[in-house]
Structure formats: structure tokens, C-alpha cells
Amino acid sequence: MIITEKQFDTFKWVDVENPENKDLAQITTAHNLNYYLVKDSLELGHLPKYEQTPNAIFFIFRAYTSDVNLKIDAVGEMSNKIAFFIFEDKILTIHRANFEFLKLQEDTHIKLGDFFLRIVSLMIDSYNKPTKDLADKIEDIEKAVFLKDPRNILLEELYYIKSQSRILKKILQITQNVVDQVSEKYSSSYLYQDIRDSLLRLLTSNEESVENSNQLMNTYLSISNQKNNEVVRLLTIFSAFFLPLTFIAGVYGMNFKFMPEINWQVGYYYSLLLMLTVVIVIYIWFRRKKIL
Image (cartoon, rainbow, N blue to C red; front, side, top):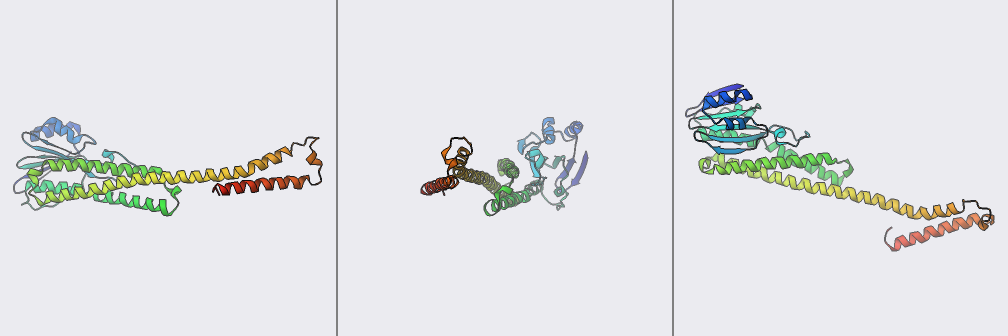
């Protein structure tokens, strides 16, 4: 466990990094907190939340800490959380992962509320790159499906794009709900409005990515089925031509002694003519039915 403290003019910031379960009691006692809330701050995969306690306001927010190119589809694999305990003259942050944006250098005159919103804003900004990367990957796959050979597209890749976009959308939606719950307390800060605008933009982009990936998957499957149908159609046409020819060749290949056509001098040419006639009849029938 690494504890860092920084004093501002009107409040103190205590940052606790990578605590273990055995440290829960120490943190709880040192800051007079609810043990179960501190436990929530260490729970893997915990979604954003807000809770008012008698002596502090409790928040959990998640920041994106992964890569869209990885084959992952779980909240805990894609993001890490920071728990906030906000007192009147102190802010306590608890997190497992190391966040570069927590090394921010803010003026000591900054207010506690603005400092809290500043960290939340940086956490939300971490979703900008993955949101854009997923949208770009969808655009590349869309070009491949419609302009190139869709057989080179892997359904596995489409699945992870869809899953990651859906998870980002879920995290951002819950974060937006948490932010809306404290509008009365922080709405006077310009940072609060920036956070809401960023959340709306990111939610819209990820919702669009989810819809596009669904449509793209359906289109890909439709094109694949269409190509399979074309192959089956082509094989059916070949079978329609060669099946009667094979039958004729099979009949005259039985070599029975009393087959009059075998003794004909023109028997070979007769069988060829019969085969040609069958092919022409089948071809005319296919043309009339607009199969060819």
C-alpha cells in the first residue's frame, strides 16, 4: 500500500494506491469510514456508484486502462476504478491501478469540489481514444465487407468490437446517472458541465458503434449466406446438366449382349446426339425460367 498526501489551501488530498484486503481495517479506522464502503472500493469490476454517508460522500468511477485490440469483453479487464471519499476538508482516493493522470499539478487555491471534478473529468477523457479506435475499426471492416472480400473478415473480431462498445456504453451510462445525482451540489462548476457534455458525446458515439457493429454483423452474415447460395446454385446447375448425361453413359456402359444400339455403326454418334439434345433442352428450360 502506497499512501500519498498533498495539502491544498482549504483541504487535504490523501491518495491510497494498491491497498490489500488486510489494509481495510487501517483505512477504515484512520478516516472513520464504513468498513463495507471501503471494501467496495477494492472489489473487482465494481460499477460506478454514489452514496451519501453521515461524514462523507462516497463515489466510484472507472477509467479506461486497456487496449481495443485485446480480446477482452469484461468490465474489470477494460477499466479500473477509483473510489472517492469526500469530506468537508479532505478527499480520499483509493485505487489498485497506477493512474498517470493522478500526478496532476493543480494550484493550491483550487476548491475541493473542483479538484474532485477535475479527476473525474480526466477519468472520462480516458474513454476518448478507445471510443474513436472502435469506430475506426468498424469503418475499416465496413469497407472490407462492401469494397473488398468479406471472407477476410473474422466474426471473432466483430464480436469483440461489439462487446467492447456495449461495455463502454454501459459504463458511461451508469457514470452519467451518478453525475446527474449530484447535479445540485456541483452544477455551479464549469467542470461539471464539461463532464456532462463529454459523457453525452461518448455515449452517442458508443451507441452508434454498437448499432453499426450489429448491422455490420448482420450484413456480413447475409453476404456470406448469399455467397454460399451462389455456390449451391452453381453446383445445382452443373448437376442438372451432367446427371442425365451420366445416366445415358451409364446405360450404354452396361455392355449387355442384346443392346441393339451397341451394334449400330452410328451408335456412338447417336449417343452423342442424344446427350447434346438433352443439354440443349435443359439449357432452354433454364433460360425460360431465368435461372441462367
